[in-house]
Length: 294
Length: 327
Ligand SMILES: [Zn+2]
Image (cartoon, rainbow over all chains, first blue to last red; front, side, top):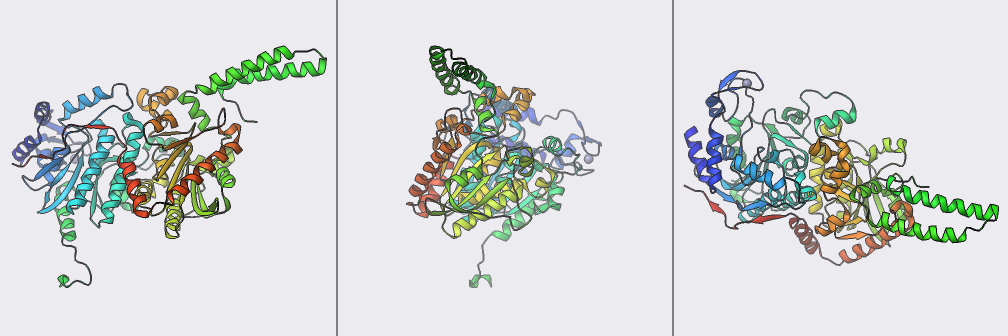
């Protein structure tokens, strides 16, 4: 399983720095990792085997985009879109190009989202996976454009769309351009909806701000990972505004489920199977009045 | 009398001095005419230099000015027969976001907008123009109604942002904003948006997906407030002035970026110096935009609205070809 991951991941590499970075990323910091929830000292490889979840308590560690693709898509089946789409510096924001360069090297990714097409349980699908290591998974012009193009391609091919969000929100360094990506991606989802194609939003830790307030909340089906932080405003800002302490489970996936904002909370180990089932349910598209229903 | 802004102080002081000399001339019979003429000339120059070179931060201050016209001021001044409509039909009515039906130059339209207060009491009631999900859902309900009855939609944008509260989160602030973005993109009727003061982040954008986006001359539109940006960038909200410059948030910036379609000029010193003149200019802009957009078919309208937002963003592209990674 782990070996597969290594093999698969190398397939995404197109930059030499990327390959280097990926290798470095895959060397565990230590052989042991302490679970952030149950404090159990775990063998790092064990956590990886469990798709970056704690085998003891089920705590979900962050999962990066290549790992997500590898664990979600059918083997050997991913065509990446728009890998050459990269950020510029529209505001001439101090330190932004250097920051981009640095995270590119550190993550091996070109941007905070990877988009493309593949299959899940044999069902063709357009996917987008955000990676919170890339400037907090923030959405700037490139993220907005890649997601929009991916949705447009899904409409052309008549494929369903699945977007895995993991983002702190709009990318401040691109100012109002980032803000407008919320409108752009949502407008593309409107077209997808008009085309009667399903969109599944998978909200992972964290999904906040401008991403939460755009495409991540607009799924025909919204699925969240256990314990994921999901919300619009930051906890501290809210506490300062209302001058009261917020409950511990505030803005967690479970909190959102309780308040009717998401359809279900799914453990990462069951995610692929759940998605596959949902896709199966939407394949074929039987309409009333048609004999094929029988 | 409008409260003065800090950067206006030299001008206010000079004006007071001129007034004093006038009084002297009248009361004591001493002739200061020459001095007054000189000082008035100086006042004009000073006015030009202060208002002609407003910094982004000065604009933020003007955009937030307590006496700046609010959405209801525009509504009363621009439209006739306004009927305010209330409630989201699900939970409540949000006073931070107002809406209703009215006539614009004889054309029935739907109007929605953020509503700030004039004083502390009113601002507490209006939540400083920061809507909860109900506000956005009311706006959407009214917009869908406009679509059904073929009325153009006018959106007045003036908010520090969506309200950051516990109840707002519980009732889906994110979903309410997101839903408006999606629905407005497909609304089968002309939508005209105008940022009259503060265009604060997603809470502003939730009324901002339209065929035209106008901004008042000193309005601002940003992904995060200058204070918020400063806190993140330099861990110091007091650096807001610096952040206002860095973030490129003025109407002039947005026009240069191709995001704003036009700028409505304000009276010297800002809209609050002459609300009547401001309202009239906004009215002219809205009337001409509505008349222009009504000529377009629904398909044309929706396609150009989509392309308008699709075109926003700056990036570079190494290659268009999808890269194959199949083994
Ligand atoms: Zn654990």
